[in-house]
Length: 165
Image (cartoon, rainbow, N blue to C red; front, side):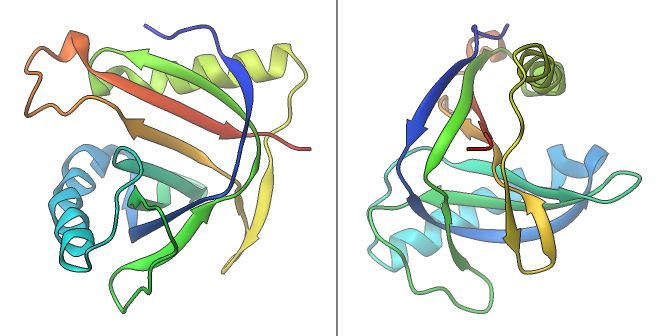
């Protein structure tokens, strides 16, 4: 289930993340495995977490290969290293909605967000990244911890889509 999308302005949000190139169908087994690593890194560096763990989708090649990040929002910009990178969600207008339910239903919610944006003539924002043009921000923030809430029908995930100014 997806709530009615809304538009909100968000300030820049620094984070630490691990980048991974992954096939879309491999996301459920590849990306969650990086969560403990990024959380341990943040703890080891004594950084203050400012929100839930997220997956950010940066780009998708023809076919299904995606450039992704598994990250943690922080109170300040971290000093990254060879494995963990400093980054940020850019300030701007975002289309946001809350998905409630199992993660395997998230693609339907992303499609519903895309449909809503199209119906309301909203364009996806883009920023120039390391490899040229990338999605500005298309992210899933995992509000519910599945280790604490076993019933997947109650899992909440916030979806973000950066909009063009």
